[in-house]
Amino acid sequence: MKLCRFDEDRLGVVIGDAVHDVTEAQAQIRAAARYDMKGDPVIAALPAWRKRIEDMAAKVPGIPLARVKLISPVARPSKTLAAPTNYGRHIEEMRARKDIPGAAKLPSPKIGTAGFLKSNSAVVGPSEGIPLRFLDRLNEHEVELVVIIGKQGSDIPRDKAKDYIAGYTLGLDMTVRGPEDRSFRKSIDGYAVLGPWMVTAEEVPDPDDMTVTLHLNDELKQTAETKDLIYDIGRLIEFASSFYTLYPGDVYYTGTPHGVSPVKPGDVIKVSSAPIGAFAIKVRAHQIGG
Image (cartoon, rainbow, N blue to C red; front, top):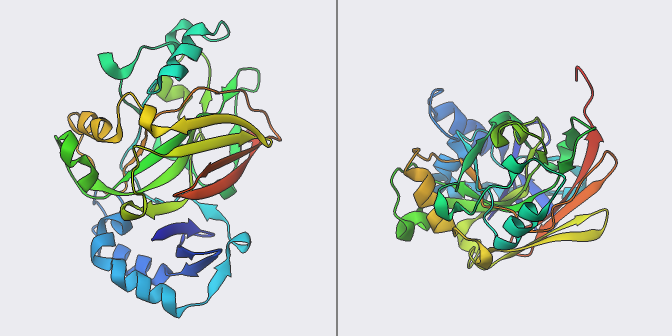
């Protein structure tokens, strides 16, 4: 199943090129959830509600995808996690660069740098665009496969990790280069793109053998082959859950391949992966005070 959020906080099931509005299910789930729950109530309730959501979708007419504004497929992650330097060739390209501070050239996660946090306020969907700040500095794209956690867990062993996954989406871990801490530079508003929707886990046959591509203004810039991850998805979840309790709706960016490059206002970034789908997002300048 493909679940999306669209327009003004509406929930939909994507079937073909249409969105079937099931916002009533979202309303009922949220009404029954505690206000102080950790994580996203819709993702947490999905196992119990899936059949009802599918039945609701079958009873309502579809809205063409071209007529809706896609927002982040997860409304309330408790955490936005990300894996740095998780592809060998990306490590090599960063070490070779002369135009970024040495602090950006961190080693492989094999020696303990397998995760960092991005601010949840950085999360946006494709329709919202990317508002670049610090235009006098390098702003760059980083395309990634993103895991969406489906149930609460801590100290999760690698061989059980996929039992905790609700689904997958695509992401852009945008970054401004500079001397500040990585989490600070990657947590700017709009610098954590998620989309186009969540694909439930059973529809992705092997997340450790997927291809994700990024085109910048129709030029291929990045191709991620998840089989090349240094820390595979199971190991990432094992690592993160040794520090944090993971909750439904937590999102985990799994790392970017080589090919990162600068972006500027007016650019269009397109991200695609066959098992999930594709989205395009526009880059613009941040408006001071906006």
